[in-house]
Image (cartoon, rainbow over all chains, first blue to last red):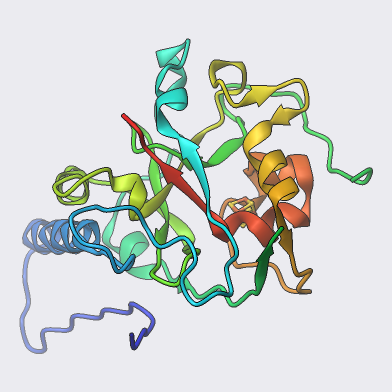
Length: 107
Length: 135
Ligand code: SF4
């Protein structure tokens, strides 16, 4: 799979718009981006099937965590905002995806 | 490892973060599970939106395709034990990471529970951990 940095710049030359309209468009673009991100499946499996555990052999094991455990949390109030940052166009479009190149060996 | 960074006092504002949390309120996108195994980490976690949640959960548990970060809830999690987070501890027992000099680029390192607990070793095995939601 040919992977490239997810950099998107939209420059509509000659078009001038009021701030509220620009913000509206920016929000709509963010929503589209986030929806498309949510659809991404790099696991090679369809229909939400379990991700590859061995792959090309470089990765010996993938640790899996029992989601049920985390879900049976004693204190539901522990959930909530973790970063007090607001979602804006700059933040979403500015985030890079880092390729991890590392050889891992299972025991 | 005897040179582990020590945790500071925990407050609601500066809570360590769990780098392998389920998709819940407050969770942010930390990485994408890839076909070869392992995770592509985002240099900065992304706040998830309603559109993302809808799309990510449409075909099954989002955690099988993504890694999320949320607050570490410590004793509120069954993976928490006397030595701290048992997930990273057991991952380190089961996986042997090559000690590459460069750590993966990661935007949550200063607040990451695994890094606080295990130091750089945690970052070497971190991309191999996938959260499987059995719910
Ligand atoms: S273990 Fe390291 S690479 Fe993984 S989330 Fe924590 S700081 Fe980032």
